[in-house]
Amino acid sequence: MMDQEILNYVVEKTRELIHAPSCSNEAKIAAQCWLDAVGTDAQKEETPKFLEELEEDIMPLDQLIRFAESEKGRRYFGADTAEGIASHAKEIQAAGARYCDCPACLAVAAILEKKDELLE
Image (cartoon, rainbow, N blue to C red; front, side, top):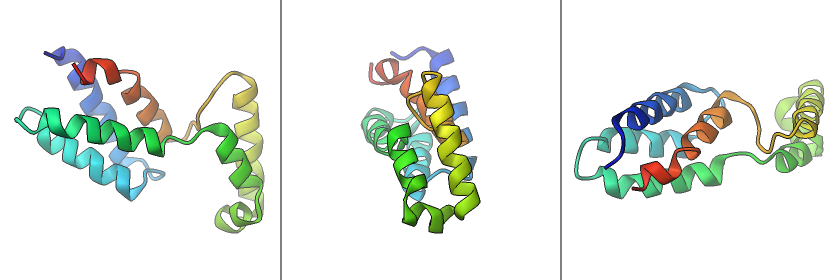
């Protein structure tokens, strides 16, 4: 059985994820489904689905940099913002980060750190 403290932590991070402006619709839906299942018989079924969605959604820095430096990325973010995102991503990557540090990705990374405990 999962530790209540870990469950409370993941619930809190899941709420942060849902409220993050950079959270995808798919992640919001998976997060809400998981939150709705917490404490019910459905929790065991929803947890792997939730974690799978998060693993698909977390943004590796290499991918973020490629997108921000592309024409599509410049159109999506605007040229100045795209340049800033690419520059910031390169800085944090050089410091050892593997993933984007937007609020949604930070919440996802925190949740995924508890993956093994969630799947117990």
